[in-house]
Image (cartoon, rainbow, N blue to C red; front, top):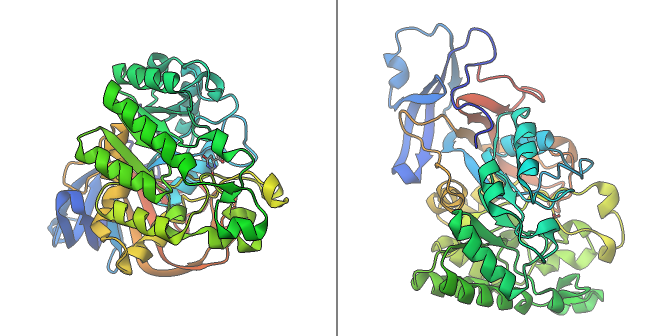
Length: 453
Ligand code: DOR
């Protein structure tokens, strides 16, 4: 379900056309990497080509943005966002979460159901979509719960969730450990063409665990969280998937073992997909050495060998998508002893700059990275991908690869600032995010930018 009509007219009076001049338009799905002019009108990309601006008769009712040195990318899609509403609005609400998404270049987000109440019924999904309509324009595609109340006991009503607008189901934050229930979930979801998104964690192996099981946890005196807690669930789920059919997606893959099993499952033709978070690509358990609760996440930050395997799996497509797992928590909740802090870090506004920097260092081809943030998540969630092509909805972002900025709390649109990247100087910044031709975010335009005008 869309949260806003695709062809909203410009809100600010008079401006009907946006011209982005001489941007580097980069869309690997379209085989496009060219310096062009892009003309946006009526919510769609009207023209895209070299010198297209010169073909315009006049510039009345037109806003021209000089794009030289900047990149136009298809808008990003986040498969894994915690918007925290209903129930935890002190951490984030739908409006602030969507502003954070837009500021990070995201045009669509899939909010996870671990709200209060959990999104396990159609009316809660509908409530989220209603609230999203009051937001900045970023579209919302909720993930419903697999089990009622995320309790791991009874399945939720997938048909009602799907009808209300859910695109997948997950008990994220908790694992569906009961094999019988997981089997039924895969079968039931298949009937409604919903993807089953697993938070892979055998809770019997992680009771009391705080950090990846290894030398850092030992040194810090924290109970260890072994890799096998994830791997044993992934192995079982892939066996179930082979028996049931349907679509399976692994949330926040964190181990070399998961990556290897997925590679093998894909080679066998199973409909298994996976995502990886920026933090599992960028950080290891060594980041915990100062007991920084901002680094406490679920699953935990692992070791170099896992990070290497995750990058390799992302590069070769074994891991389909990058998803932020944007998990805002209030400062008062994180500013406590390590074992009392909730897991999670924010990610929407840092994802693109952090990962483009890695692509430029040669960690992953830029084309694969952009695919992992645009087309691949759309494939997983069954959404139309954004495209930089004439006639397509203008869902895109303008990125300045040279801009430097400091990741300070005041720089975020999110209500929360729980990230270990706080204080870092970053290179690369989103300047403008268009959704259906409208500016969902524009740098310097204040909290509620009106339109590309
Ligand atoms: O770190 C995490 N935080 N992982 C999860 O699976 C849940 C999330 C949250 O909701 O805070």
